[in-house]
Length: 183
Image 1: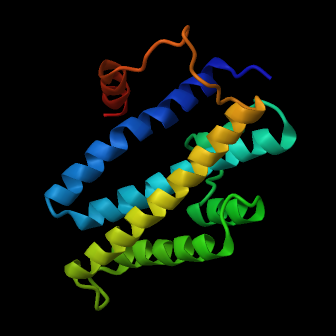
Image 2: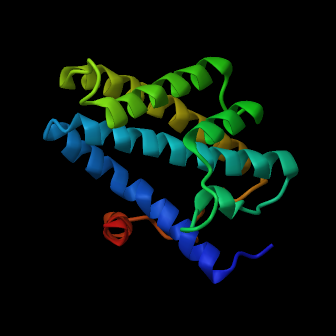
């Protein structure tokens, strides 16, 4: 099924976030803004898992369609929470039990940091180890997405294709354009 113009814009917006994330996280950590870092890291894990769910669905059902409900949630529509994304990822064998539990624990930590910073015993220095754990979880989820993309290329199923001579090279200017669209 061909995506609508609105779905194409939503997908582009989703991907533009991937271009902005590394710069945002670097700035947050350099400025010792670990509340921001933890929020960004949690959001990035959520985004990567959403992409992994799309890739997995394409492989299992042997199609190239994108479930835009995972990648775009316009105002006024039902929100698919991070916890629901984590649970779907476990149900669809995108993550294993151990990673699922770590993601749940990290999300609880994120919520404690965001919602109870002033009314609990949390110290700002407690945020740094949480951010380090999130870095490790990001690496794990990134590896999962990479494996799913590789499987799509090898099987010829899904939206991921190998670059060839006719594929234009993705340049720094392309990254900058994506980055600026998300600012």
